[in-house]
Image (tube, rainbow, N blue to C red; front, side):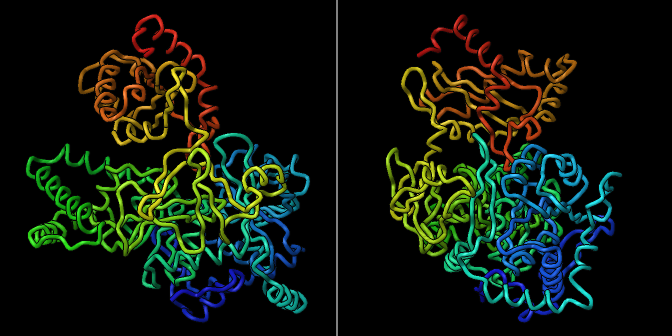
Length: 615
């Protein structure tokens, strides 16, 4: 049963309901085990954080920032701030010094909470240009402070400020602020990572959270028996909203500290739910295909048959909410109790309830595979500006492969010019922090938020086309959707990253980052004489191998959408080079700028070598 209330009161209310039951769990890397934090302890830490913030002089609706990876301490600070009407701003743990300085100054941050050594070092490096900053509070006690740092304290020192004697006035102020808390208050400012231009601070109110939690509870079957694995960063509105939904249901939150540990965490925690982006499931899909490729003849045969039966069962019947023929039910049940069950257990997902997936388009192959494996992937669509969920697959109505589900209660949708998706409702942001012109550009006079995504409705389901700004027009007047082409290629295990080039060009080309470990094995197996990655990526045998794989992967594309030329890159796209956002989306313009010479050379060579590619 969901506890629906103002977020400032949520943890205290749940503590009264659940007491010593585990609310949060995290891995202690020193002890090598998961540690539980009860609802009572959670509530006590939150209250101490509220009083400590008051003691430091935090004002009503003042902004504070949390610069950390996923940690229990992030929740203590966030909910402690909500308890006294203070606004929290999460920074991605991988944010650069320039990004941190921009957000700190834009939001006039006085109090900054940091996670581990890397965040502390980044924050301290910009202290001189962040004039509002008064104090850094460090979560990890092992962080080594700079010799000239005289204003940082550790979280234990901070929380100690919220307990003991002589706090009566602060407790009275706490009660006053609790009474004054309202749904119009600003709760968070989330800075978009931005694939183009400077990031914007999306303002999120308590009303938006309240309406979003209510809407999601109405369509998703959650209970306090569920166990969530928090995989995506809390800075991402998808994980933040999803986590708060779980807390409101009383579900235990298992906090994955390091993204690279997710497979290990799955096998240790055995979650019932986990929000993720399609790339996670693409990696799982590739791993299963790889296992099939290297298994015995009988293993390959059994896995293939099991997944084929599972796919047929879900696609034709279960997804359409129709009963399957008896023979297919019996076939599926047999595989579900044997091969498919072993597959789920290997992943740590034998207790699966459902798995919300959003952030990009899910390829039909991957969606079909996940459901064939008996895992209930719930595809959806949302934005930071809509406080995550706009639409998601229904548990009771038909689900069409490739859709992003049905609009959640309380939202209006309209398809505008250029098939743009327009939204209106209580979960939509009021605008961007201190950016009136950007707000007016995004939200029209009638209150419709212009998403920038193209899509269409069919039989009550929403389908996405492409980011409107990402559509390319070739010099021959043909429109190209780069993400659609890229998503086809990265399903292949030899492709790690792909960026399509086509705008104002005569044909489509691609910058490709191969999966180096697989490519190096390929070269070793064939005895190729290469000295480094650069030589490997340009070797004729490797180029021929990738040409063949590309031709196979793009068979269904129109001729003008097909990649005619490509370059294999010896170095990956990275956040450090600002080629990727903090959510690992490609900043196309940065990539094009960094590889301008390579791109021009590719087209110049094509001009000379294959004029037939111009058509």
